[in-house]
Image (cartoon, rainbow, N blue to C red; front, side):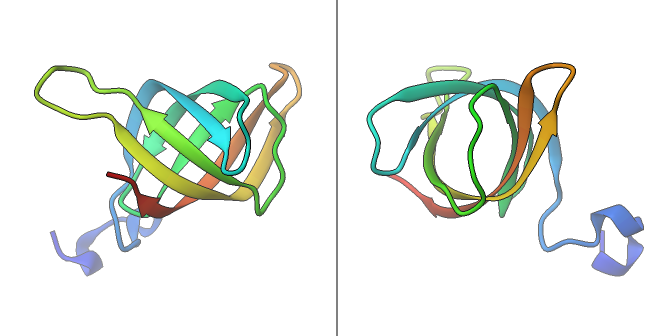
Length: 103
């Protein structure tokens, strides 16, 4: 599908896929490990939900586990570019940009 044929919401460089999978992450120079959920994923970023309050500009190493033996987990360095509190759930939605895919 050509970029001009997509709906307005998907006029991006990468299509956003809805997902619902657990992730683990650490601050790039930290040791403490946190958990969350990945709600959507594209070639450029992710939408994460977590109880951990983070700040814009924080860099994280995120791991999305593999669903089977034929695939390796996705490990990426990301930067937080948006933080939206979900007060009723005591969670935060984090928009993150993928900076590097790790081997």
